[in-house]
Length: 457
Image (tube, rainbow, N blue to C red; front, side):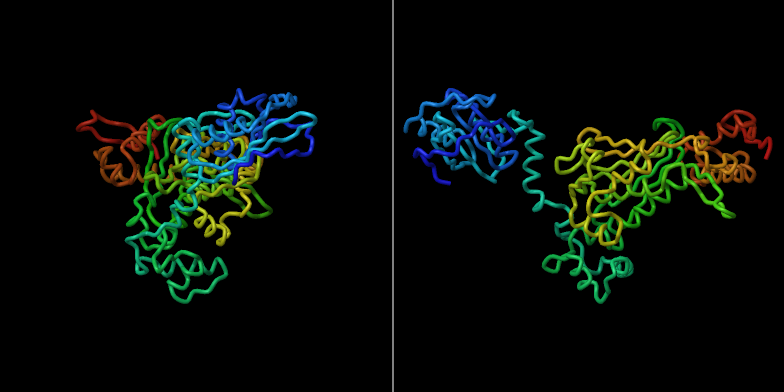
């Protein structure tokens, strides 16, 4: 834009107010503050305007205007704003008084005033922290820097599992002919090379290229992580991991029963649709540049789904709870989820979770993790569930296996039990202590050299 210093009357304004794109200054005695406001607005909205001769309450006081005044404003902006911008500076009439209007536009953010970066928050200018500045730069380049659209250098067409691709295309209503043509239809190839999203979703072994293509699950015997009953890692494509996560939760929470006519129907203590949505969100929107996996942690009172990476695109916990909005860190991956009917386009996922499980909590932990927490329910709170029918299937299987191993070898150690069953030594200790308290199991002799005795079946 060219700088203009000619008198240019404009329509009289009587309702000027400070906003995120308008700043009012009583005179050029506040020129430095005005330059800072210009940078703050550019960093937030890539446009803005500053008026000199109008107080911040909107009262028009006027500004003495000369050629030197306009040159001073232009010079302050040229000397103290980086990268360079080219403002339109105009002498303008507001009512019967003369004022100065400075209009700016620019997309080369972040902009700096006097060596510092600022952001507009409401009608105030706030200096950006190092982390906020980093996020601003990443936000500007997010399309170019998206992980899912980057080429996976080491992967080839031979790494793609044709069966996985065929099953996916069938869900989408598309036909399979060759692997390259099919991937082309899904925009998963660039110049003949596989994109990260193609490998994550359809490679025979995605973990060969991405060690964080992993799901980590654990069950804890208390309200914290002090007693681990069981822990397991899963590897594979993102769709397989979603299914594994869903199965793991269903295996380790209470399943009640209710009658529908003559049929008995399983009733999990947490709505499956709700936690499935939480799982899908975790894999779809996570930050795949972070080495960590998606983690499922099952405690006595809750189930946590932990996803690497904070909310994206300026979203907040309050925003996602109250409004149907969506900002997608992995746009291509989200499109694949949508094509296969795993997510909806308009960000209804959080709303659906809260409709089915209103007590669900969302939290950002530090700078690295987003956590969705689903409350486990006391089964007595379900009027439609028969308490006598409630079972903890996995716990019963583990207990039965422990008893069978003890029958065959009464001197078996905790470590040997853990290895045979596939759970941790702490998990075995937890189960053994519980069996002793129930009067089912008894220890004869010392820890070393003693043996187990089953008191009652």
